[in-house]
Length: 402
Ligand code: FA5
Ligand code: MG
Image (cartoon, rainbow, N blue to C red; front, side, top):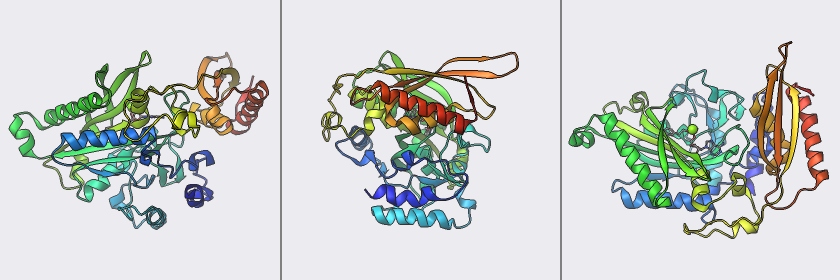
């Protein structure tokens, strides 16, 4: 496939900031959302259908924007030759409609300079000013500047994150954005923010009903730098509340950047894996990356009524590891080490004990659950993985094994 070779130049950059492992780079360009028979593609198409049939004012769709974006405010950047050439090449290869655009993951959507999401701990950096987008919101400001007013952006996004059945370092989001004019809310007699917030919730509740029929859901107030008020929608799934999207009324400063100070807008970011898990009853997020025919053959283009039939559950294997952490230790770094060694054979990493001794040293004990979705793992194999984890954790994370 073109992907790995194509992006390999980027990975091999000798930039000290680069924290993108090969396992992540190999996912660039896979574009699961553009495969009509893949659950992620099926759910994307179903969402498109909802917007087609419910909105007379059409939403434009973008699904091939480069995932390599800048951290910066685009308007104050000098010509960003490196990235431009990168994205230019990418677009040429993939024949996309949008060329030579530079998207900003943070500044343009008002993410503060000290926000955790900017850290090397949370985000994959290609170099100090270039990241793998951690959300599709990276495209909002630029599309607005280009004159788009109502759009859906679907793409792969990348995050250093914890390991469990609903989190994966590469996943897919769909961003929705809709700008309103005074005539829209004046007619309703409501204040513009309230009007947009109500319209947004109505739109997303309708979408949930379109996808799932009757389903238990709830709104939770939250915070995003780029919206106010902000909400998350949770759906009851497998005896727990699962967060499926974030959304809100767009901060006025973002609209102002595009001369829209007299308008109001809403925006949302859907987690497509999470929605697909609910729709198809898929129990583990790793399955989306499986080539196993027992998984892939269960889904067909446009088929929304399918419930995933697990192909027998293989036994889990639990291994604990304890160490004294150093000041620089973070759980995301630990998870990345485990993932680097075990790949998709790791199902979960969980902190099960933590204490600080009299000398002020802190110990963590993590339980690692190893399980393949495709076969039984042997004892030797798991012991080997665990011993590699022990070596690597010591070598890379500056911790002292207990
Ligand atoms: C965002 O990414 C915001 N950009 C969403 C947004 C857009 C808010 C526009 C307001 C306006 P958040 O970090 O909560 O928000 O992620 C959005 C969704 O992505 C989550 O609700 C979840 O469904 C999904 N998600 C987040 N992290 C992961 C992960 N590691 N694996 C799989 N899905 C994830
Ligand atoms: Mg969230």
